Image (cartoon, rainbow, N blue to C red; front, side):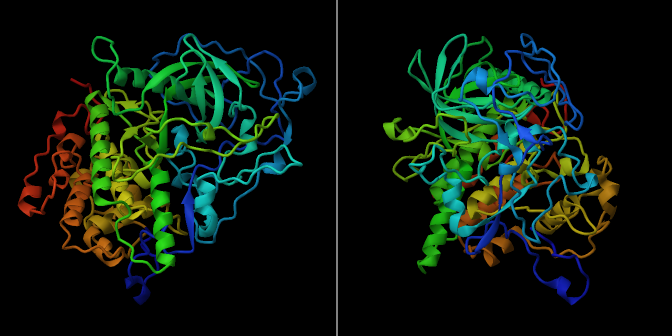
Length: 592
């Protein structure tokens, strides 16, 4: 959402803001947000051979992110031997041909970026990236890959070309997967199909790659003890990653056990089944075995956008809804339910977004999930998440996942939270924050599930930062500036505002209400009761004042979730808001 491409004054400044353009259904090209870059490697060669049995150290190296604040929970029992961070000599002769040394320059390919695309965090000024230092899975939330609409969906859904008879290399889209340079010091653990990993309670065999992120790679595995299928998450090396993984384990255990330590049935959060360590060529990695889930909501969004794009190309009638209303209602309610469950257990997710909401996989695991060709040497493989039917006959079920950045209501592990598009104003402005930061993210996600586009998509300008553009977009949508009473508690208010009615570097704003956006841009019928109710629900999530922002439990009683609900303004206005019952809903405080 851009206010103006150049923030110029004059008549041209009165046109509609260039808002909500990312991923537009009928646009030929669009910027696709993904974590496609990670810790930069300065090595001439990437070492993927197993060196000696010694374990590499994980102490911070020059240029590494500052330490994540740690709760100190579950951090005993891991011993790391010190080792220099230089390039390890090749040991392929000692360990056979299972691992290969790659020149970094062959795969460290920079993805072209259009002239108007946002700058990466490494190219923008330090003033513009105050939140990119400690929150390790958010380091690349501002990076953009430019992809052509003709192949974006195939590449995202991992439709790789089969390997040729002459080659042992399985093809993959290098722009959609992790980079080979990230398998160097402090990087990923090199995993091959057929690898086996042993914990205290099981032994897991790797069957297929499910996905990856800045934090880890994820693999479909079978337990050789129980026969159960699991998703094995193998975390990157590095002190920040290890501490975050240990904090995630402690938080998941808290959410999965009752007061007496017994497992909780039907938890709305993805279940952790096992955790252990893996010794790799560069050090010891944390591994976590989760219950097997299907694809995430981002896949669902892309799938439905692809279908709408194809239908529009054939000049077929297209509904403005990205998802059927009943599916939308079910997903939002379960998302509120899962987040409320965490909040009632004094846990804040801090990174609610489509990638972190998983669809329950109900289908049987069949033989077609196994790769037709298994490479003999390590190589990057295409991600192949388990697709799940979302037909109306089988109601969709979701669970909240990826608590690598989660924190406690009474002990914030980091203040650098939330992916850019879902970041709340209290985080941008340095206000106290609490559980209701998740609710702002849910509001942004509701819009994305409704339209397929980001609600807020800030850009870096010549005279303003992404944070200031982000604040301008929020003000334009909500139609009001933060109150002076709210501003007095914001550390960075004067950095962006001259007074309570003007931004420091963006003088021209074009207010465009949510109702007008949906009607004028997305062609929704504003006489539709569902749209009216959704607007009210969404705006209850997007309030500056944390005492006025609704909590998830209160929103679950919203009339939108009633069968055949009709819009009644009085009923919406009188919806009770019990956010004060949520521990730490506005700030870091002792839970009752």
